[in-house]
Image (cartoon, rainbow, N blue to C red):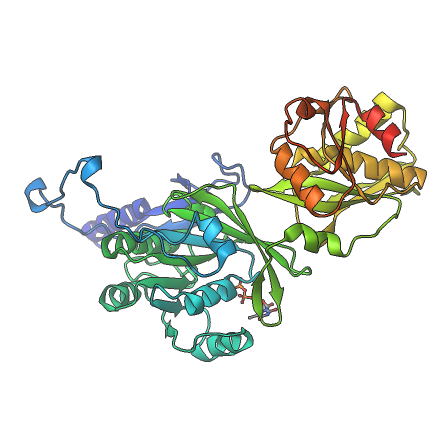
Length: 464
Ligand code: TYD
Ligand code: MG
């Protein structure tokens, strides 16, 4: 090899090297070299090597742009600002319907029902003409899924494609004004060399769709799978790009699914939608408390009813505890659907403030229905369920319990108290334990008997 060739080779390698970059597949942060732990999100083993897209585009001069500057008062939003999907649980989570030109990401574990939900939305929507683009399944598979769903509109248009440039021009050219891309991990851009599903591909495809959504004013829904492994990019990377991030969650073994807004530029993130996966597709659950309490175990020790909030809605739910003698030196503590550390804190409060010893016992906590709740107002119900199981004494099944427990054993006030009480009253409960701090501010009359309480010891004395 001549000396010149050798030099060229080194320069070539050097240039190539500059183009490769390491990206965290969990949060999308970049690093010039591989790192075991991501400094920005703290995840381990998430860095993957990517090569940057070629930046061959020429910069435009300012004269070539023609971007108007408008006053806020001059901007028109149109009268039919939002389009209803026809699924009211879905509309509520979106903030009242679909906003034109918005890019919505629906994330969730594989098999949770994202494709089913979007297919139902596309087929059911009347005000928009939907195009369902899939890169994951064949047209026959879509047809098979659709045939399971009750009352499906067979005029729905389907396209099977994975190249984002093609998809993009199809969206621009088509007469459809609602687009679904299922999923973002299955499509690829020709401009990026890495494999479909990699961080750069996902980001490139999403930003192209974002531009198209804004330019054409067609709302676009994209599906994103959540995986923690480094290979496939999780929707975290996309959260900054899109307008709305919805999370579809639920235990696969249970049929209930919760749609939650994680980020919403056009609405509140407090709203949730509850669905049930049935053999005829997803059904809306309008009265969640009734369903979660339907299979209630009346008068069993270890069961208490909490009045929690799920988003902006009250939800009465059965909290179960099993306190059993432990066979181990270190007893087990396990919580399903509830924060494990909070459970440990409650056990410590009961032991220290009330002298109830759990040291010889295993404790298992379960929130019925397979849902996860992070509402501290369930503390008191949980503590009551544990004591009920330990003493083998059931709690009156017509009593609901609300209250956050503090470290000194005090019962602290919670938010949305009136909504919670009304829900309990509506469902036929006769008595409700509430924090004394809340009681002072209530000026409505209820049929249900309110029991204001200041300390956990008083609450337990009332219950047992
Ligand atoms: P799917 O929408 O394919 O999930 P995702 O797109 O999130 O991966 O849903 C798949 C699951 O839903 C599958 O396990 C079958 C079930 N399912 C029903 O139980 N009933 C139905 O009517 C449909 C269409 C699916
Ligand atoms: Mg799917």
